[in-house]
Image 1 (cartoon, rainbow, N blue to C red):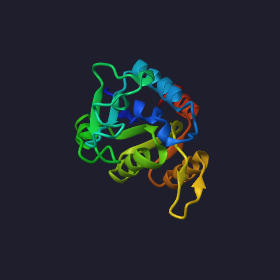
Image 2 (image 1 turned 90 degrees about the vertical axis):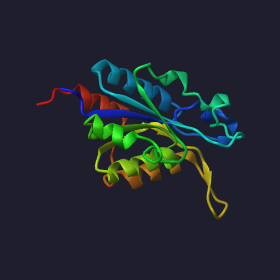
Image 3 (image 1 turned 30 degrees about the horizontal axis):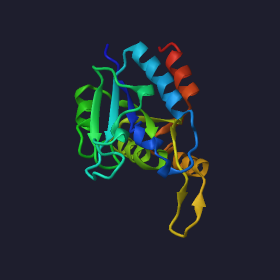
Image 4 (image 1 turned 45 degrees about the vertical axis):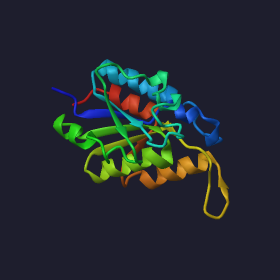
Length: 188
């Protein structure tokens, strides 16, 4: 029987190595994504990559810049699907939803960058579209942000609050260890 779950890796691109983003939490996010990816491939489950593509030639996400490239730590295999997007949600302007439906996938595990932006937006839409959605807390990361009042919020705070707004409303939040343990348990 074909697995009904997919791993979605959102925007794990070289662009996030640019110093313009500032301080970041969870520096092990990509390593955790890699651990999940290895287990996922071992079990033969589908992997879907989301790659942000900007039309702005000055953007670090424009295809002419090295930042557009998916990080080598989670490099896609030739048979794995890549959807490019131009907005925060991986479901808008792509065939992601159709692909999941055509593949009879009803469970989505989301990882990637960054927690309060494309990961959060994709997670919200996944839950709203009726997919059983899991977001892996330590397989995503956030950067510090300054709010509308000029107050700086540390990356850990941004990350934790974003996860809190998603948990049990749009997704179930797991750690990498919880996901791996769950996958290794025998199923009835």
